[in-house]
Amino acid sequence: MKILSIETSCDDTGISIMEVKGGITNASFTVLANNVSSQIDIHIPYGGVFPALAKREHIKNLPIILGKTLKEAKLNKKNKPVDLITVTHGPGLEPTLWTGITFAQELAKKWNVPIMPVNHMEGHMLSIFANKKKKFKISKIKNPTLALLVSGGHTELVLIKKWMNYEIIGQTLDDAVGEAFDKVARMLNLPYPGGPQISLLAEKARKDKLRITNNELRIKLPRPMLYSKNLDFSFSGLKTAVLYLVRDIGPIETLNEKTKAQIALEFENAAIECLVHKTKKAIEKYKIKTLIVAGGVSANKHLKNEMEKTTSAKAGQAGKKVKLFFPTQELTGDNSLMIGIAGYLNYIKNKKKVPTINSIKATGNLRL
Image (tube, rainbow, N blue to C red):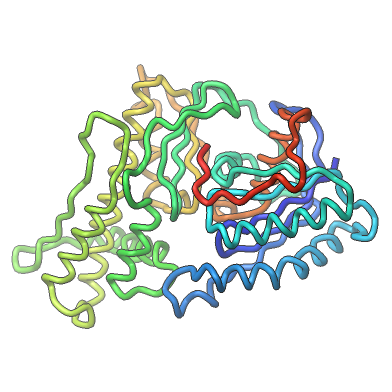
C-alpha cells in the first residue's frame, strides 16, 4: 500500500510518500518521495519558534510541498494516489499541529482514504529504522528495549517489553534537555538554533583541551538529580546555574570566545552526564538488551560517544553488550518518514479501530 505522511508539530513542514508491505515485525518501506521545508531563517529574529508565524508558514507550504512530493512520486493528485494518510497529532505546538491535521482531513475526504494519527515521540523512536537509502525495513530487536527520547520539548526514558507497548519510567520534572541547550545558547549570545552552537563550541573546547588555570575563573556546574533514587531528570537548575555564572562574570559582551567555549563544554558535560547516568541505571535495573536514543538532541556527538561507551560489552550487564540504535544524522530532527513508519505500524495493529476522519484532534501534551 502507498501512504502519505505529514509532519507539522513545530517549525518543519514535512511530507513523504512511501510504498509499504509486511506486518509489524517485518514491514519493508520504499521511499517514493520525501520533502521538508525548514523555517529556521524565519524564526531567527525571535530567538525561537514563534507559533503564530509557524502556523502561517505551514499553511502556505503544505500545498506546495504536496505538489512537489506527488510529482516526484509520479502520482496524480486528482485520482486516489495513496491508500492511507498518516499525520502527527501530538505532542507539539497545537496551532501548527492543527494545520497538518486539517490538511490531512481535507485530502482524506477528497481521496476517500483513512487517516492514522501518530504520536510524534513514537515517530522519533521508530526513526532508527529509516536511512538515506530509498528502501529500509523494520529490523528485529531484542527486548526489553529502553528508549531515551531527547528533544527540545521532551526528555524521557521509555521501557518497551513488547514492541509498540510503552511505559515511561523516567522523565524531566521541568525543562527538556534540548530546551536547556537552547536557553543556555541564548545566555551566551549564540545564534539560533542554539543547541547545535553549544555543541560546536563544546566540541572545539574538548578538541583543544581547554582547561581552567589557577589564574582563571573556575567553571563548575551542578549535575541535578544525578544520584536521586528514581530515573527522573531536571535541567532547570542547571540552566539557572549557567545564568548566575554568566551574571557573575560580567556583561555578556565582555565574554571572550575561550570563556564561552569553557562554559559550553562544562554545560554539555553536565547535561550529558545526567542523561547517561540515568540511562545506565535503567539498563541495569531492567536488564535492557537494546537501547534506542532518538529526538533532536540525539544528533549531539558527545551524547553518542558516551552512550557507545555505556553500552559496550565492557560496561554492559554481566559483560554483555547492549545493542545501541541512533537515527541517521538527517533523521534526528522532525521528519515525515518517521510519522509514516509509526502510522503504518499502528494502522496494521488497529485496522478495526481506525479513527474517523473528523475525530482526529491536536493534542499538544500527548503522551506515549
